[in-house]
View (tube, rainbow, N blue to C red):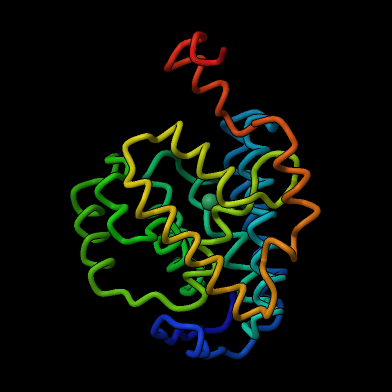
Length: 249
Ligand SMILES: [Fe+2]
């Protein structure tokens, strides 16, 4: 079990330093072990090739978070665990409820910080809850409403929100917000696009300032490769299935 972790909320703004918590020894190793456990649970119900997107996305989120945390003066080990485990619920569950099931899965293991990330990474801005899938139980939905009303996001929450968007699931590459957002917009068109895209670009700017370098430059080679690669994140498949072939020509 990881040691008890503490979370200190910070106000937004480049001048506000995130309070660092002491690095938990072996947190990375523990996160890897827990991810493997969830992987085996999902492998028992789905073929390996079907779950590779989730594996790639989670590993990219871990790598991205660790690198940005190191440059921004945050706890890189904690950020790695946050990134790797943010979608752990997709191993033990599916649909929108993966966030609450992932939260409970990690709480039971004593990983309170990473359990929190299972919830917070999905809601930036917080108004996203109204567009979220509705396969939660009424109790879980109320729990989420209460949680979002009270929670004050800190730098680890914000980093996980950004990592979720920049951690591509295909090609094992970090991708731009804009490319990933196109995929989200096509697949989930009932979103407040202006608000959400503005918020994400704000996060890019916030962490670029903390790193002293634009994060697109930090991952420039990967982002270039990703932009030049085919859409492999379900965009074409979704258009064909839902909007028709004519739109592709
Ligand atoms: Fe994710």
